[in-house]
Image (tube, rainbow, N blue to C red):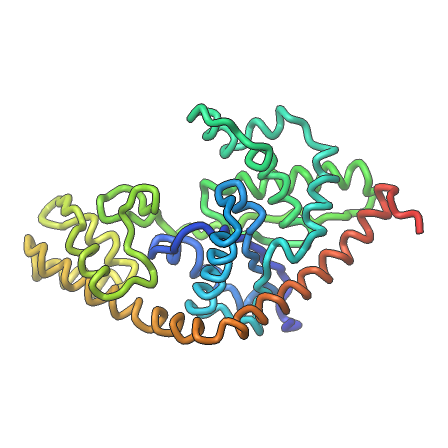
Length: 322
């Protein structure tokens, strides 16, 4: 690690579904942008994903896909520890310990639980306990900052509450766990989908991050042209992810009301952006053993760091006898 880097960054990514440009600009890009300024740990949240995926082959493929995705967009394994959550079993051990300090009413305030309850779903224990497993993920690596969207800030708040409670009960004046801070980028706006709603796989309104040219063309031409002052707002909102405001102001002024031309301009810019990372991903996929070795080495590093923390935890809670 660079001696000038003082903060540890950690984030988890569930291997569920293919990423779209909203995922990239809203979250994925942050990891690449911060890899030179932070000691970064990015994990594939395969245990978290089991609340949604209960098929072994699907989970394995999803995990491999997300590793390829992150390497393709520029995550450098020499700078970032990229690992699989399940390669750090100390996390589940710590979750069990944290559960003994956590009340059910406290967990019932979690957004994920309340959302599931509102939909009258039969909620599994994994979903109910999701915030505490996430707290264990964060705290076991001594994370200083956790990149999250505004709607995910509660995850970090749960981790902070859990750290404070543990430190108070078992710390005896010593800070066993750091209190992490959320890293929320103020200039990252919600990326709209082709229908004007938030871009989301569940709305089927995405532009896939690694799409082929024809798929990009079809998506761009399908953007709903909700206009105000002859400006197609949805087209413009997506376009400004790829071009600066000065360029766009001139382009859209010269083509007022010419929605097809503006969509084609957006299409060209999306294709120009996607093509190199799509081709890089294809090259990486030709050597899966090398990709898996990156994941395995990251797991060893994260595991060693977690085990060092757990030795202290086991000592202070009283289970370490020999």
